[in-house]
Amino acid sequence: MSFNTFGKMFRFTTWGESHGPAIGCVVDGCPPNIALSQKDIQIDMNRRRPGKSKFTSQRKESDKVEILSGVFQGKTTGTPISMIIYNTDARSRDYESIKDKFRPGHADYTYFKKYGIRDYRGGGRQSARETASRVAAGAIAKKVLQNKIGKKFKVIGAVIQLGLLGCNVKNWKDKEIQKNPFFCPDKSVIKLWEKYLLGVRKSGSSCGAMIEIRASGIPIGLGAPIYSKLDADIAAALMSINAVKGVNIGSGMYSALLSGLENSDEIRRKGKKTLFQSNNAGGILGGISSGQDIIASFAVKPTSSILLNRKTINKKGKNTEISVKGRHDPCVGIRAVPIGEAMMNCVLLDHYLMNKAQCK
Image (cartoon, rainbow, N blue to C red):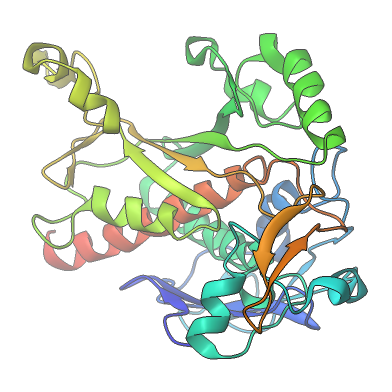
């Protein structure tokens, strides 16, 4: 299997399977002399790990990350940073009864047809467990960007819609995101979301979610026209996350509903500052950052592994039915928030380094 590496100048390669002994990643292209510790990475790992609440998978993984190389005396050396995360709570027996069946809506079928073999234990390489490695890489990218850009740099994500239920993004409060199990920025909907998701779980089904990522303190000029557009790379990064089926940059798909008058972000000058009257472009014009907040959102489909019986086929092509038992997220989109943040951080650092190489 090829294409396990992401990025151009700041790159990371992930490895490992959901029910293997460990997963991990190797980060290449990290600048030297950046203060970095395992604790810096663990903060983000803890936000993504399963088993934190009754609204996520009950698989109990500590997701403790160990740095094996690339850091000396508390600073990066500029050499590859290798990290490992041991799997400690895999239950492969949960998949024995369905090992020859394909879960509808899952990558089981396409993986088997492409490679002629697949690790059925938790989905193997196709499992969302792989994203823990991305979060580790994203934590490093964040440390570098904070060092290079300064305190004004920040990337924060939130769930803005849970299944059929949305929230008021005008009530967005960064501090609130860290206080509830949904990563929701609007505290007024938390109790309603709790009742809704518990009902979804009790029914044996699942639901999707919409996540919004906001990046502030971004310098003007990141990205390049045509084939290295910043928004194109952000979209590709977010689409690469398991279960993501759509990405918006700024107004995104909704731009088609606006008139030219409504969609244009008018520009004014106040003293030495250039100000935009709105941000339908999501902070990116012609593939290049404008200095505004970069705003991207993405849709995560409902979890494919559900308790309810579904029609499918087996490896021999015979019609059958499947019901998936075990520990699964009723809404996998909840834990996608720190993953989306990580991918945003990685893209921004990649483009920051490319911009520095070309433009002083």
